[in-house]
Amino acid sequence: MAEIASETVLRMADDASVQHVGDGAVVLLARSGQLYTCNGTTEAFLDKVDGARNLDQIVDLLSDEFEVDKATLGEDMTALASELVAEGILADPGA
Image (tube, rainbow, N blue to C red; front, side):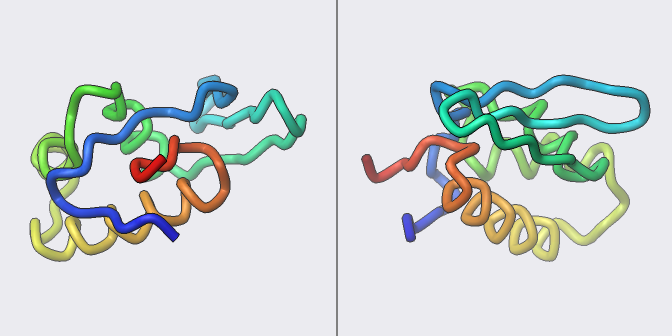
């Protein structure tokens, strides 16, 4: 699994797209046709992933939205980013 560090720049995989539906979002992976539903936290996270911001910058933006300790948020978002890379939703930063 790719190592995600605070300075890792994150971007969506080429075949992944986020669609906002109702109170949440879904991610479609075009190559496999898989559909993933997102909770509010994942939706907010993916909204900040733009291929230019690194993980630390994304955590800074999210800390303005969520009332949670920044260190805890950073740990949670690092774990989430790793999961999303493993699922093919985020591009592998090591590739």
